[in-house]
Length: 117
Image: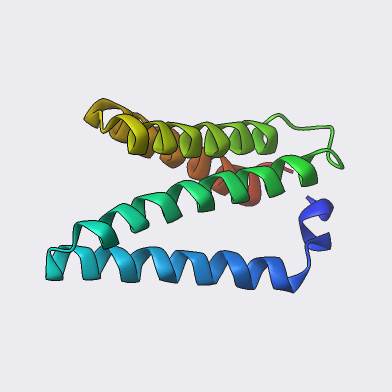
């Protein structure tokens, strides 16, 4: 897990800002009934998932002993891809699959950080 310590602080700030932006757009879209804000929140969700998954995958190359971090990275990237597919097709099943796959990716990451080593 030493590879994750090499990520610059700027990357963590961008991820945090993206998450705050996602929740702000989501709440605004729901409260105001603005479909464009809701669409933007869904897009930001996909970008965050792909971005975090990519960072985890690149950092996992330094830690060859465990499959958990690469598994989390793949789940996050796939979840983001399913989110983009949902945005293009508006198929609700893709939205659900995206959320579940991202949730699995986050769960794998939490497992890797707290229990694996």
